[in-house]
Image (cartoon, rainbow, N blue to C red):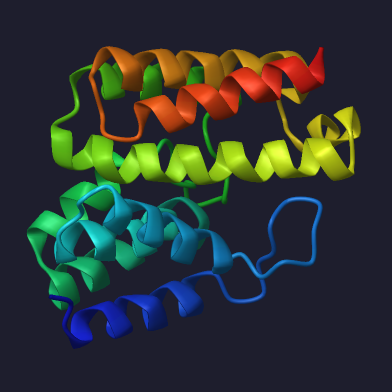
Length: 188
């Protein structure tokens, strides 16, 4: 059963992602963490994992000042899950490490991450892959212009993610692999 903590987490996600939109769209960014939480629950998440799914991008997009807030309001486990789903936190100047460096480090992290982190992270990656797939159908290959790594890097990253989640037998691995295969087919 979910408690009022889930509403509190959604409120924090709305605050942290205020005025942010999904890349290349007018869709409020908070729609993404809501979708990730829904997928995580579909794949068996407990309340802490669902909360972490709602907050999975807060540190990355909102900043490190949210870490103590997450821990105070939701506990150490939720913060650890959010940290486990974060591939880069902006420094004091608002900069992150280069894209390829962050993605390679994150892939290495996922190869060893515990099952709780895999559930939340895999739900995030599945939601993103489905969004890219939907945009490929409506926008076409120009969708890749939205991404730092463009078409080649984005396809490489999602194939590597799908392979890791499949190897680790994460619950969403088949859905992610299917979405990535379709992404590759449409992008060819």
